[in-house]
Image (cartoon, rainbow, N blue to C red; front, side, top):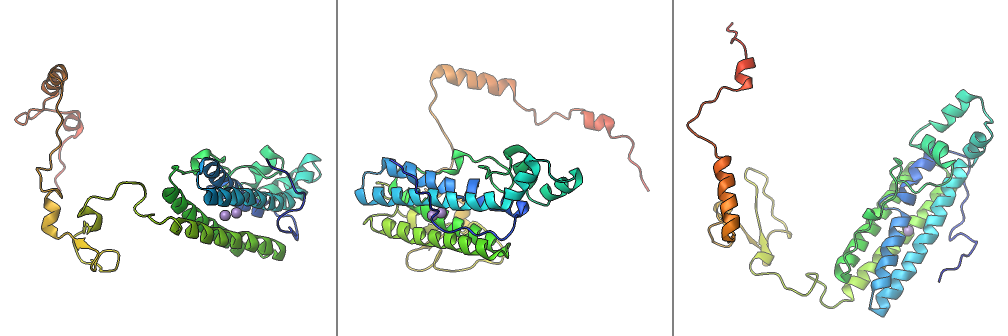
Length: 293
Ligand code: MN
Ligand code: MN
């Protein structure tokens, strides 16, 4: 069960209203790398998790992400507080109000449609969607996804910190950013606490394809690194690119039942092209005379 502690996880001190900044901060409220997405990602993973350690970790972090959602949403609400009142009471001259709400981002949408409250959208006003959650129900897949999600959240906070000089907001965003670093560390430790974590799942890869680097490009610029060369790697050469990897025909086949075979043949006959034809087309008719100069 959940219970609500009225204190925020981190104190929010906003120096002055700024609807345009509020709309940019929505990226971490209702955006793909934002706090609601993080909370829902770990909450749903945690409910299905059988390992007691991972279940505890996922539900702890999911709950903390909701606390982050509360912090970032409160910053947005403080930044919009003035605009909310101005709009509700039509306090300014129309032109002044228009100017204050259209200063940048989607702050006008936030004010007109959502009344100045934190909306579950990204910074461009795109509504939050469960499609942001990419869990697959396998711990080594999902932990890797979580590590990537935390690193994305960290970078978005870093960018938001770079666009505000409000010390209170910088401070709170710095806390939220730092917590994502801690989460990334926890998820990495949890991943490597699974003895056999690579490749994901139960099946091993098929040799030699699991250590084959396909050098799929020609021309200058081929570069060697630990990602494609060394004792772990075989590399294809140019002639390999003209053959199938399995040494087979490289064709695609299927055995069809006789009645389906008939319909496919009928279709092929009906739509066959005649390589000896030279048809007159609309393009030919409309081309006009060739101008020679
Ligand atoms: Mn967070
Ligand atoms: Mn996090």
